[in-house]
Image (cartoon, rainbow, N blue to C red; front, side):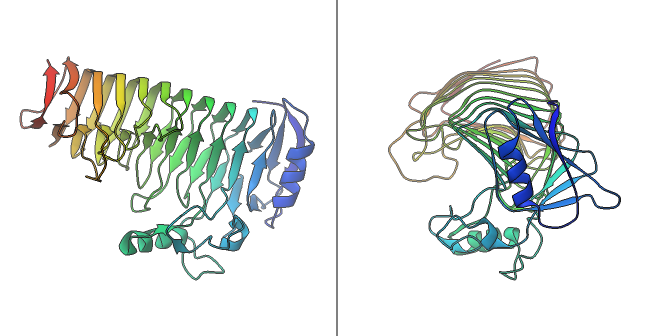
Length: 368
């Protein structure tokens, strides 16, 4: 953990300006430390921007809490906290934009207040998300941590709670380490993905516990944004959520993903690869080893018609291996290659499956 360049003490009041000023004046290689003072342990904040080479350290018991006011996070179009066709009207709580060698450390907490009523909207971020689902529109809500075009970013021991939307997005970046992090948001909080590496490479997520209302992890390769490659997921635990997913955007290719020592209990899906005609691409060299899947409806999924959207793209998924996978409880294994350019290719060895497991296989070659 980096040594401190400055220590700020909680007062319970709005601290955005003080934190940003401290970050901007901090020497490279050091961190701004957030600490409690007496019974005060909360820093209220609007959007923060992380500089290159500078980190944020949050003491155990200290909470960095997003202000429950939509206008504070508005990105200039006055749409934050509303429904629209775009859904990109809010700044993230913390943004890393074209920076390197920065991170967030400490055993404290970052709280997005996703379920708290917004003082200027009379509804919560999560309620807004549910209204978007019911109306067919998109919600303009903040993400918790947004990392764009950056290198060598570290998240260590931090606790992430109640994000209004995705918790961690790593976009078009190189080098992310997430170590011993805890992400815990209610299962009914819509669109609250845990960690989304998008069109990025060299990612390690280890000893991390993720429970959310959407994908625990979603690896994506967005169109015209580059491939997603070289990622390791080691010794992680997933609770509620939609599982460890690749997709649905696989347009630019997903390669070299290693998953080892993963425990999943109560997720909707287990190990899932998903896309459809609108977002299909190549997925190759995916290795799942030593995974325990308990009380999960769909333990293993490769689905090429995930949302059945229109388009002309076809999936090419091959060299996918499953080794020492244990499934407990009633579950399905689904290989749906309906929109594959050739049969899905997967290898299964040392599988420990219940006798009543249900297989659903279409246009797939599974070697056992």
